[in-house]
Amino acid sequence: MRRLIDIRGLALVALIIITSISFGQEVRWSQYYVVMPTINPAATGAFGGDYRIMGNYRMSNYSGAISSFNTIYASYDQGINKHKDDGYAKNTFFSAGLSVLNDKAGEGSLATTEIGGLLSFHLKMSELNFVSIGVKLAYGSRSVDYTGFKWATQFDGSDGTYDAT
Image (cartoon, rainbow, N blue to C red; front, side):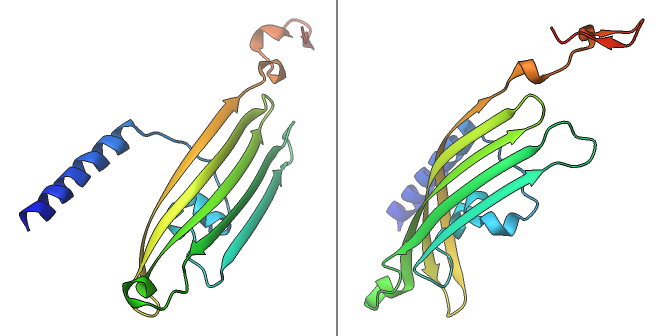
């Protein structure tokens, strides 16, 4: 019993350290339920089938906007040994997946590109209830094109002209 408490304490300390050095920012989704593994990695593999492929394209260009916002998202996930029928394994399964995201926003073309791996563990509590835990490890990059911006020094207030240089 004492050893179990020591392991739990060590796991708690490791979790606190990992969350204190981790950081992130994600794309805002209006229909978040369509991209669940990206928002909540524990949802990886939590569906009725054997595998799932998702794709999402969003182009937003509202009136008055000079440039649009474009987002492309794709992911694949599946359960591993999801339908095993032997002993303890029939109540547990792992899931894995992959997600890719590209987002460009605004006049400066603020671009976000991300590729990530998803991993989750599911424990069946009853016929319809599961406890799941998941993690997403991703690599991302951001860039911006400053030539797309207009600065106050480019406007001539005396005659209302604009100098693009």
